[in-house]
Length: 119
Image 1 (cartoon, one colour):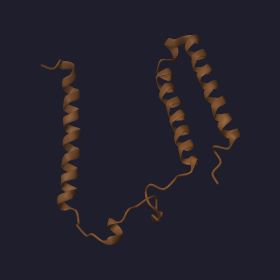
Image 2 (cartoon, helix red, strand yellow; image 1 turned 60 degrees about the vertical axis):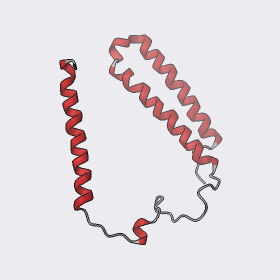
Image 3 (spheres, rainbow, N blue to C red; image 1 turned 120 degrees about the horizontal axis):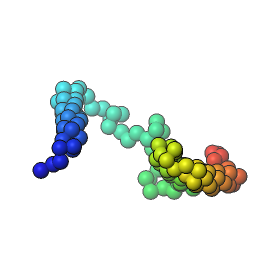
Image 4 (cartoon, rainbow, N blue to C red; image 1 turned 60 degrees about the horizontal axis):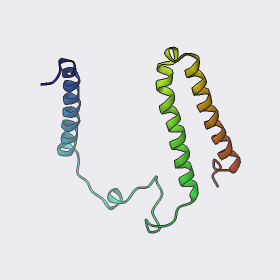
């Protein structure tokens, strides 16, 4: 009962999903199974773990995370704007200019406060 336009999309999903499952199954069945304490140990960016997982983190981790989200959202909003740039005209250009100015002010504020400096 699917519309005819969605059949190629459905076939693509089935092929991609089937390939992923077959690849995972093949590597699980055919791959070597040599377990060692080092291989089964927790890996965190090459740093050995020392303390409890519930230890306190520096506020810098959270600031970097928030900055990432802010500037990631900037890119998410800029892509559709760039695709429809000609249709939006001068109003679209001005709106994105205001948006970028606000984000630039936020970046300069964070820079001035030292949130981008890592100690």
